Length: 419
Image: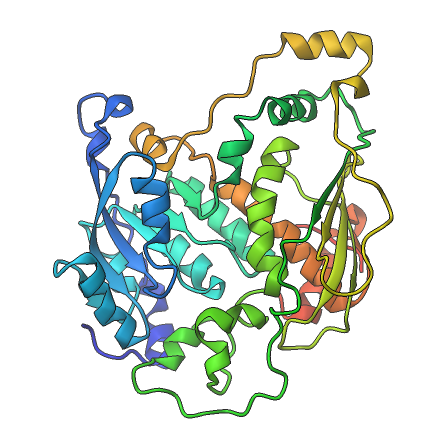
């Protein structure tokens, strides 16, 4: 196990964190990649060895007919590291610095299972080092870092799969496939009357942080500086570590961020929104706390084409009652457009992670789609934290984007917003 790394030395060494190793998977060195045997073993490294550790390896490699061997694991909690050997075998090398996993030449796939405030740095470094990537949801904590992840994954031609897979089921549904065709065909123009409502499924009341937490001594087995990483260094409290990190803005974004990516993953595919985002967002929520996530009632998000998306918490405050749910249907097209739609080919099947690695193509839950899905949650949380409606304003692109970023201590966003 490597020695404890201080926050200062970590930052000083950040420039050399991601050595640009170009790793070519075995499956592309010969034979027929598309027909690689399902028993192929992927050499994997794990960043984050907590409760979600290994879930993506099982769900997106083993479940899809391949297999993996874990070679390395990193975590800032020493007990979790020791458990990693018990769980995956003595061959697993343990590190307290996740960069040691990324720089290993024998690791082909990196699985990121840290809290979201670390996801972007780990993902970008892994892409630069030539690794394919499995990443737990929510993908990011900020909008801007999601765009940086997209750029890195595409620049280094890596395969990325987010840790949620609802779209794989959605693309097999005849109804969902038809809606997808309608939305992607361009035949609907800018008059979409569809209203999609995700009612419930958000533990809004539970996912609220402690506003009066008393600082406590840091456990000896925890490297608190490494845990905080790019987030503000707060005094240690057990509620900020482990599962409950979800309740604090420093590390995640409450029930909205933790659950929305699950629901938005199939929504994005069905409604053809993997390359765009809402232009108007309005929410109803309790007054926001600067550090702790707070309750919210609902979020209404509108797209440029008229489509309305609603996230109804269904736990706190009044229920959403502005618009009834309305599914997009072929009857929304005129007769000529209906005939054109019938002539269009069906959408191509989504590739699983092993298939995508072998073929060097995008996985079904690829990085752009994942970024757009979690952006929905981020926009809703921005509205909640500001306590007001936000709206896209292309005329004031830079000024408005920076204004939102500065108010919320967010990095500048590529998407301009009027607040």
